[in-house]
Image (cartoon, rainbow, N blue to C red; front, side, top):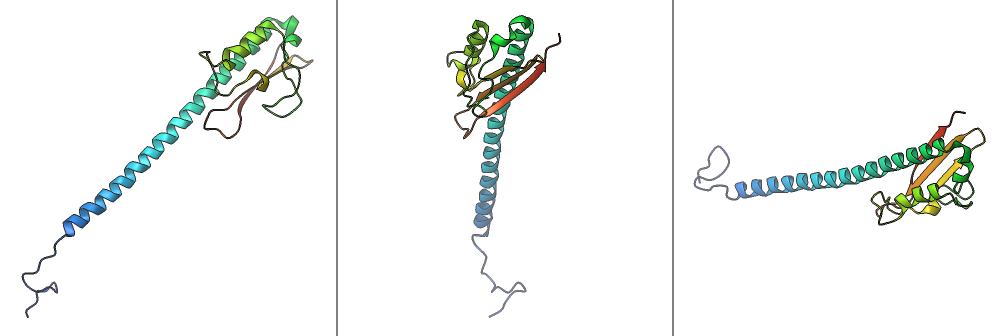
Length: 158
């Protein structure tokens, strides 16, 4: 039997190579698409976390501003200042109506500024004798395994 230079007998063609190449290309394409979907999901989670952190920063600045404008009554804004652990304080809660309204603005599920998982008991406000205000805001999104927090510190001039 005569053979071509390619090593195959004349008249015998390779069949199915195009189909095999198409299947391999399809698998490579599918892996790429799955990778993009994973990146998109990660980007959405990161964006959501950034949104919560930005809202926490605005909330902390807001209560610092309220306390600053009411310097004479700063000690009444103190809320769970110490004791326990971060986001699980065991101290006394504030009774100041301004502080309570501020707390309700992001711990009530019907509020437009609601931080997921945020409770009044998890938040901390302390006012030191040198007029240093420390605000810690805690929240926990449904996908989080632990608390997330944002802390702001400011010193009110005399």
